[in-house]
Length: 357
Ligand SMILES: Nc1ncnc2c1ncn2[C@@H]1O[C@H](COP(=O)(O)OP(=O)(O)OP(=O)(O)O)[C@@H](O)[C@H]1O
Ligand SMILES: [Mg+2]
Image (cartoon, rainbow, N blue to C red; front, top):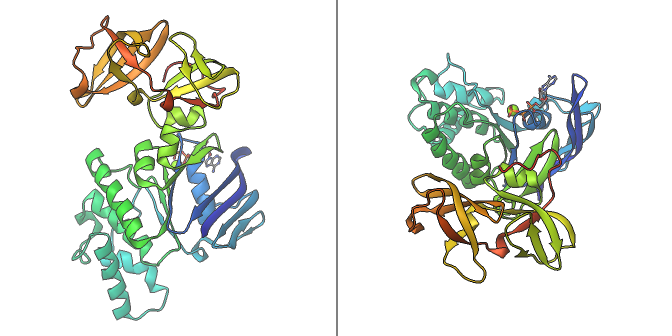
């Protein structure tokens, strides 16, 4: 069942079009990330969903109920949404328990009922026995869990996150990614997660909506978007990629340099192809192996990132260190196995100069 729907939402701010024709659905219990570079309109989208911004065109609905249309907008406090921001927005002068209870005070519940709900939610986010502490007595991760507890206590129908982990150090961020995702799945809540961090989007969401310049570029599961992107923008945004310009002729893609590669179901004509560096392996000489020369290599511990020249075509390769028997210093001759099944034809990004990513 569709929980949240944006249909053709448009929004201008200060005379500039910030969102153009934004449409996507979030199913009940699903976690969807809005991913894109700074300024692409992620927070504005979230603010429209939350009701902090009116919309100029289109419609936003939750469980079929219209929340926003041009000229008509349900007030934020009547939308039944929970919101977790980057800066935790917890009240420093209130205890943890009071912070969480705050959202319930307006609901005229009994003191006993409020205490029970507060303790339940604090348990849920992993802060039991901390109700009496003040936020300053919590670590960054615990403060963020408190912010989540505060938004969950009112039992929202959708939880909105806007870069909730950006203030945390790298290790804590990695741990909180797992925690938030596990919590979201355990309670089965519908959630939208705004981030510019591809790892967060990939590891935490059922589906990812990739945005750029106020439009949706592509939507899909993390795996589809990484392995089978439709667009050059998505291919580059989600990770290292070989992006090759060339032509398709008679079932084969001919890059500018290198050798041709079999490609199924493709029309003849100019084309752009993508191949992830991790899909390529080193191999011995053979009829399908591409002879190559190492031009650069970087040792990353678990992997070598190697750049090769294959007959004028630059090929990026990422290879697990344990499987590299040669010392891949520049000038080393090697052979590459180019897996045709991993090659994707993509829509070229007209704003991209074709520089290697
Ligand atoms: N009140 C405003 N008036 C005019 N322009 C605005 C206003 N608020 C935001 N913008 C512009 O809208 C665009 C989108 O902003 P938004 O905050 O949605 O981006 P974002 O994708 O969340 O970026 P970030 O990753 O940096 O948080 C930006 O170019 C921003 O400058
Ligand atoms: Mg933002």
